Image (cartoon, rainbow, N blue to C red; front, side, top):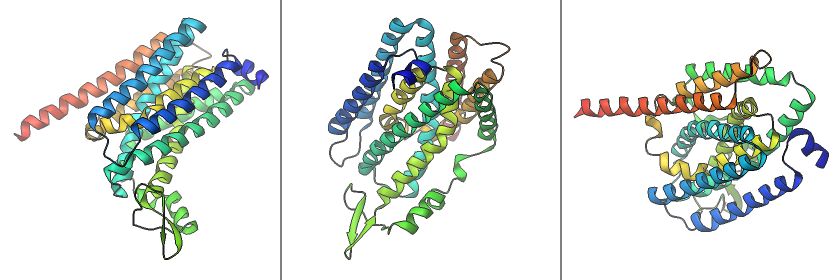
Length: 317
């Protein structure tokens, strides 16, 4: 473990362990404080929770930057911002999943909690594997760069509205393996009908959320390695970004569909960092430049979406 850590990151073994233990306790607090009961999460509570997670991430970022250097601190912040922006697009797909399975508002937070937990485990595995591959094979950077450029082009050509969640291959496989029911058993994932244990729509929605994150990881993992090649920076920034994904969903759920320029914005970000990786041998773009470009693209996409939506609302009056 010590040799692996020293090979792929400046962070010592104790920091990896302390970070993982801290995340575990934060998840317990999240489940016990914000996830109790079967009630709809209010916008106010979601804003508070989202603010807390962002505050925790930025506080850790500041400490990490002071301890391990300004450059790694900027890489951490950039990686966090990239993952957070990709998470917003992920939220739109989650909204479609809940709508397709008709998941009641009061049960959505349970699905999201376990969805985020599974996403964190998957991201951790992928990042550790990616870091090891980069350590062994430098040319993997060009593969990652190519993936991001291709994904950027796909973002410009595809629409989430085409997704038929119930016909997803993973759902079809689950239905063949496990008996399913359209009935609910409170906020439980399984129910007993005529003595047979069956999966509820909550479980099917959870599977769809996990598969969706697996697909999004194909974009986000190469993206974070375009920002930093330090495994701990990639791991911690990714985990802290998705840690607040559940709260962010309840903040943005009502108007995430109005962010019409989100996909073009994400396409521009992925295209930028993809070309950054492909050109790394010729010219290494400074971290502060990457941060500025990504932040500018996000602000432009958000403000443009808001401005056009406001004009349309005035036209309907």
